[in-house]
Image 1: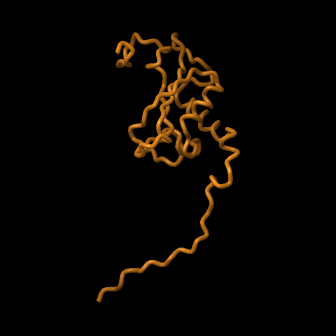
Image 2: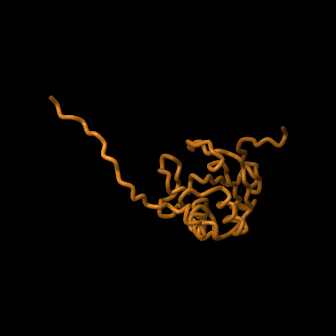
Image 3: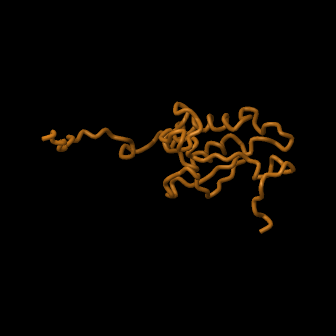
Length: 148
């Protein structure tokens, strides 16, 4: 139990995993509202990102990344698709950014939002998985009868 994550302490270094920033897929999901946990404007966000996609994009930048099997507290669905928390080290022990391109949490999340659509898995989606407009006739429903 000695390796249990403890509460924040000013003596912790930026290289300790507890000090790394957390990113949940819901932060970048364009299908979510701000109340449901989205943190960026919809124009920057991606439709239903997964923790694997976020991890792949961040590993390509050279940042230190960790994946945890956690569920976002505002997430309604308990499915495995929505699980996963990404931890990223953005600062060195001296407080300087690890990568000058990503000095803040927001800069990392914006980069992820721009990069996920460029992934090969997103570009080569089969036709069956792409949203199709439905041309089915809408059945008429019985309306309320007027007052008598």
